[in-house]
Length: 348
Length: 286
Image (cartoon, rainbow over all chains, first blue to last red; front, side, top):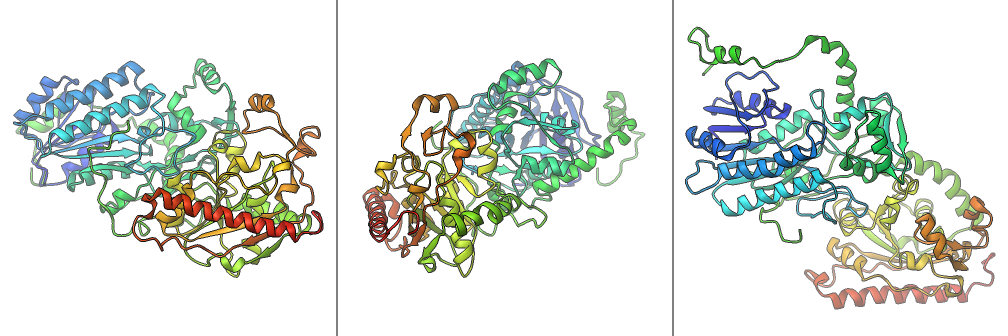
């Protein structure tokens, strides 16, 4: 199926915005609509931004009115950095439910649904396999709020796929993302002079570079990939290896026993390490990325290259920060899109 | 949680081996967490000393370890801190015409214990998950060493030496069958006397959260010195490989067959151990 009319949720996230930018370059796509509660994070040319919450009736009206055939849901909260547990639950469970409700039904124009999920789906436990494949289930029920929300969201998507057989549903489970535009608990830990870790543990880590994050989502839009796919760069690194690539020493400041208590104390000092990250710092995680490769996607960066490029960007950051970056100004964007005085480039 | 996913898994690829990550030459750690540097250092010092001088390992039947392809090595397991995995690894490195790296499976406990978690996978340990064994044997065509007795072997007391414990539930046979990899049984003599266990202290086990807390000739009264081995003479006998592709399609569905094969392998190793013990004139001199 070729997508002509696309809706991107979570346009305010870096990957949502960059994905919209990538889709804009495809002349076959007639309309791109980005929805989010917050301003877009990237400069967009012809994507129309609609500020809307996760209300299903409103989303449904947009989907039907614009005759959307492809929905890319990139808004899942996979890090407790930017949202409280309550907000994350609202976005991940209720939000997913509402978006699915807006896309479903016999009269729905939607033919493809791409869902950005997270490898947090698998959790991090002592008795995990070294490489999770897509068909594997986590060995224990989720222990953290965020993980159980992600599992529940995926369950809703699974149910949607079952009820709407005519819709191609793709779920992409992403490993921890790195890149200059990524702001997560991990990137913040990696930016500290020494990287906090748990004494006596050297967990395995796998990363995806932000270009591949956007690339994999775009690949799922371009090709029909029904099913679940892990998305992670080749290679699983040891935490100590990550630190040496970043050029920062590991700091085993968390004790192996009573870790969450110490994390609570660190939180008082301003260093917030959420429980799912603590699990990862203890047990680590690797996923099998071969299904997506087998479907034809070629990763641009391995985990190691992702860390190296991230480190480069991190070093350059202080020099670039003075620039200010992009800020969404509603009047300017509307002028650029609708004014008869704007000369349009290219086909549109 | 246990229901089958309604979404189909990704399309089956022609060759999952071709899709394995390429080797990055700048890396010193594998995707399994194995570190060339740490293992090389240990190999050149401690393993070398133990293998040549302390245990004076003698190896028989090294040609039974295949030079290519995946193979599952199955051995008896003994000693409070079992030296058998390291000595088998070293034996293949020293004696085999085509030395190959070896992964050995460890209990999940090790991944969760501080310190050990850092060390064990650096030197070749892999958590004993069926998916891990399958990936190593089938996709990566590597050698995997398993101890089906597990901790039941290493925690048993000195009076039970060279009496093999139960061989798990035959999971190792199933793993080899699925990967169509041959099974090479191994009989190791000497590990029982290198660090014999005279008693288990349940209370200290609970306090330290270790898998067991043994009393050995040197431990716990000599503290860290307790990890020293007694200089028992080692003999490692690799037995003839058992092909696992001789039982047709999906032999692992036949649990009876799996159990029978596991029991046969156990009996063969036990038989060899009896033979080795009966031909040994001295525990220390061989």
